[in-house]
Length: 130
Image (tube, rainbow, N blue to C red; front, side):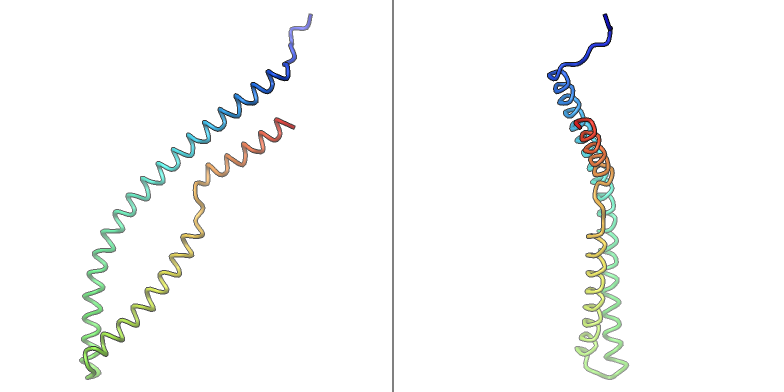
């Protein structure tokens, strides 16, 4: 008698379900680990950037105040005119920074390993079931 035994349809289905469940578990574990790492990295970066932005903000306010007063003094214009010029220049800078920042955020690829392995696993499952 041949020692190799053919699997019944029920066993094949059970094995496929078990493999599918294990695959889902491993994908969830990978996604959780990847999200934790991203959250830590982003959290630290955001904290450091917040401190830098605050310090830079104070510096910019003082610099712009100095420039506004200097414009008014050099051109012998009213002080409000110097502040209006500086305000318009800062508005243009803010618009440019917002535009560039938005483009960078929308171009980011989120959780690349998880997406790649999910695609691989779907292909594997298709090949196994066909």
